Each structure stands twice: as structure tokens, then as C-alpha cells.
Image 1: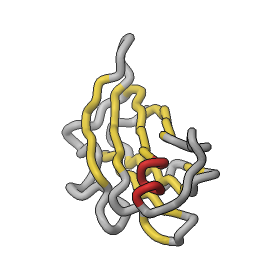
Image 2: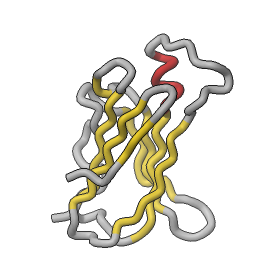
Image 3: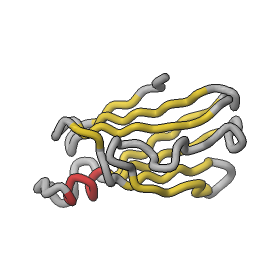
Image 4: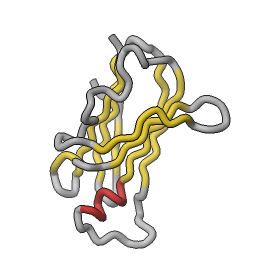
Length: 118
């Protein structure tokens, strides 16, 4: 049973990125379609389970938008204006709708890293 999930870790503070705004979009045609918008829970994960469950999984191109600057500003971090990293935009593909796609993000105000997790 395929699904899509994410997990965001704040590497500046050494904790999950609780409260970060995340948006999932499908990239079909000229304009992206927003599928889900949410705030991460205390563990840095989507509060209601997978971003896409087995029924919603489909082969295609997707985008995750992670609102990094507002998250760090809310934590009291003095960011330059404009911030070095504002929104992390991650475009990726789902080639197997029955697969498990996990997209972690490790982030600070100055750097980020991602990979396909398990």
C-alpha cells in the first residue's frame, strides 16, 4: 500500500520543526494544484498521517513547499531581509503508486538537505 510522508528536522535547534507550514501540490499542466496544506505536529510530521494515502497515490510530478523563514522567525531567530532561505521548494516524481515515498527535510536558516527516505 503506497503512501507519501514527510518529516522535518530543525538542525539549528536540534528538534522537530513543529508548526512549520507545508503545502503539497500536484504538477499537472500550467498551474500546480494544491492537494493539502498543513502545519507539522510536535514530531515534525503531518498531523493526520500520510500526505497521500494509498487511495490518493498516483504516478506523477509533485511539489512540497516548506515555509522555512516564517518557522524560524516564529522561533525568534533574527533573519536577514530578505532571508537566505525563505521557502524550500522540492519537486519530485512518484513513479510507483504502490511505493512508500518518504521525503525528509533537514533544515536551518542557512542550509537544507533532503533525500528519499524509507
